[in-house]
Length: 507
Picture (spheres, rainbow, N blue to C red):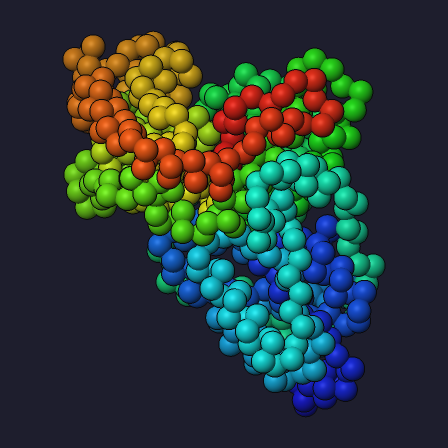
C-alpha cells in the first residue's frame, strides 16, 4: 500500500531531475546537484555498475573506499531531505527503468575522464536520452576539458576554473519516498577478497580532516619529505583517494590551499605552493586520458608498440608482485602497498621503472597489477605515469631508478625496510639494505639479478628505437597532443616556477 502510494506521488510530480553520482561523492561544489536542485525535485542516484567492478584494474579496496564514501553521502543527503538512492546494474538499464516509472525532467552528471569503457557507457546513455527526449546535462568537474582543441592556454583555464566560486550544497531537497536500496557487498560484485588492513577510509569527513591538518602543519616539511616512504606517510596530503572518489573537489582543495597560503612564509608556504602545483599537475595528467583514452592500453609512441615482456604467472613477474626480488627497498615498497593501498610518488615510480626496465616486464601488466593495489587509482594519472616511468611515451627522458641506491637515499638506516620485510629485522643498520653483504638472511631471496647490468641492457633496449625522422615526427605529435607547455604552468601567487612534477601517481 505504501509503495503504491509512493509511486502515485511520484507520477503526480511535474517532473524530477536525476543526479547521477559517479566519482563525485559529495554535496558541496557539485554542479549537477546544484543545477538539478534549482529546477525542482531531485532523485540523487548512485549506480553500482557490475561491469565497472569486473574490469581488470578494479579491486575490492577501491570499491570499499567508494562504498564508505557513498554511505556518508547518503547521510548528508538525508539531512537535506532526500537520501541517496542506490541501484545495482548497468546505467542504461537503471536509468531507463527509472524513466519508465516516474516523470524525469532531466539527468545531470559530471563528465568523467576515466578511459574507454566509461566513455562508451556515457555515449550510450547520451544516445538513449536523446531518443527518450530527456535532456542529459554533463558538467565539468575538474581541470580536464572535453574536446580540447589544443594544450595552449590550458594552465590559464585551470586557474580560472579553480578560482570560480565553490558551489554550496542545496539548502533542502524534497523527499521522494523511494526505497533507497542497499550498497552491495564487494563479493556480490565478484570482487575477490582484498585484505588491506592499512587502507584509508572513505567519506567527506576524512577528506576534510586530512585537508585541514595538511594545510595547518603537515605541509611544513612537504617539499623535502615527499620522496621518503617513511616521512611521506605523514607529510604528504594523503588526499589522493578522496580526489579520485570525489569526496573533495579539486577546486575546494585549491581554494583552501590559497587561503592557507595567504600571509604564510617559510616552509609552510613552500609546502602549500608545492601542493598547489601538484593539484594542477593532477588535472594535467587527467587531461591526457580525456584527450586520448587509448593510453590505458597502447603506448603513446608507436615505436614502443611491440615492447612487451613477462606477465602474470611468470616467475620474474610473480617475484616482483610479491615483494621478493631480493632488493630490499623495492620489496618493502611493494609489501607496503599491498598492505596499505598507498605509497609516495617516488616509490611508485621506482616500482614501475624497475619492473619495466630492469626486469623487462610488460608495462601494461605492471600497470594493471599496481592499479588494483592503489586505493587512489585515477586512470588518467596512472596510465600516463606507468608509460612515462616505463619509458614508452617517446617524449619523456628515460629515467631509471636504482633499487639499491634508492634505499640508501630514502631509507638510510633501513627502518622502512625492517618494518615491511621482517626477514631482515635481525640485520643491523644499513646491512638490511644489502643483506648479501652479510651472507643473506633466512627466508629472504638472493637478488633476482645484477641491477646494474640489467639497467645497462634496458637502456640499450629503450634508447635503441629513439632515432630517425619517423621516430622524431611521432614524438613531436605526442608532445603536441599531451605536452604541458611548462612555461604556462606557473602557480599564481608562488615565488618561483614549479619544479618538474613528482606527484603524478597520487602522492
